[in-house]
Length: 333
Image (cartoon, rainbow, N blue to C red):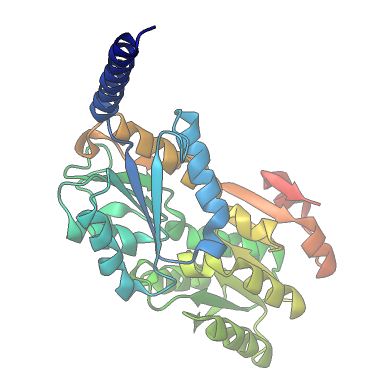
């Protein structure tokens, strides 16, 4: 091949390569950008890791895999509600495709205050209408929808179950987080139920790790016979600490969700947090696929489970009545 033809061939090949590269760039530019989920939580990544895994499972059930066809950016308030507006602002500025507000109602309230256009999917253990998150459960309106399991409303039922377990106890402690607006009405509801059962309720506050230690010291010093742990994301995140202290001081206690019983708690009545987060993942995929939050009904829990930990009961030398065992949806041995 002559030098001239060699140069012509090289130019032809080079031109074809440039043309192909240009086509590849155009094809990539025409591909839709990978959607981004802004995952906001009021607690810490360490304590909430099982719930994040459950959320990802919900996404995967609809074909969304993190790092493959979806990006998730995480922001954690570390138990400091005043950080939430700043964290949400980062999502709004980016902007993300959808904000998933978890770990109590405060993240969802902060997200709704920050944007009326970016879709928001919340998780809530209470009625979201009470916090102005949605106009109704069936047709939320606006840009907010989510998953709710109404655990905060089950305090009287938990107290009744605890009374069946330890009928000779006359004084019961209620452990709640005073910084959580969701728990504000729980003392009054529990006091009313306690009067009907002939019980006295002692309210103990805990919004930090040290507060939980102090609360158990008060229980021991005042010979309080049993404990109800209120529905709260901070207290749920401290499940290992709370169940360990309850076992150490031999305090029969009832908890909000299955995860607490699984961590060594005596008994729980409510929902599985992990299942709630899985359902939130599914709800999020519906938004990503184009459904409008205004028309996407709030996913409501329809089943509440009683879980009894027999191993913990034996350690406490506490017999479980046959009636209670018959009611249990799950017995941990």
